[in-house]
Length: 220
Ligand code: CA
Image 1: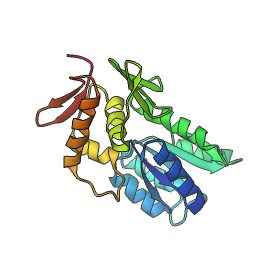
Image 2 (image 1 turned 180 degrees about the vertical axis):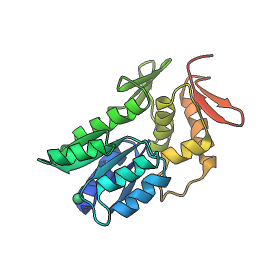
Image 3 (image 1 turned 45 degrees about the vertical axis):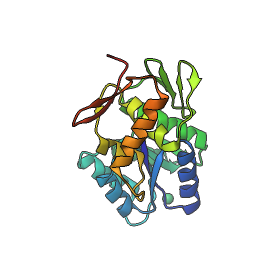
């Protein structure tokens, strides 16, 4: 899962990036509206945290442009504490949720988890596929109740597949959703992550769909 953070205040931007990294996400960050618009327009994000008061181009305009261009990723806006009118404009411009500043990081993380799982059509914070469970609240995966030890990239691959259970996911989709923008991407490493995951998971859960990609499914 890959998140875009848009925040012009350097300390808050760093705090957000650190907290999201720690929660297992790939993270890109922008500090002004123009960069934010560009990143959101060409990157594949599973969610965006968007501050509204931004230099160069304000957050509402950025959001309107994304939505007008058909970019439908979930967007959580950050607003002034008493900015009810800002929230109304933000939601009308296409925001999916909002949080007033200052906020608790735990609440932001919970709201992001909810946005991401709703976008994937999941009702619960615990994603299940046969014997495999992924608890998005603590970024832990387990098989029949036994915790799995995963590297951060293995976790990202597994989390993306779990959020898109039963769907065919191409290698390039995985690359887009597990790496941040500035990371040296190599789609061959996806195969390595899949091979390692297969060794840790019950046989047959991750299926290869020839020429197309992978499908995580408990079905035969
Ligand atoms: Ca701001």
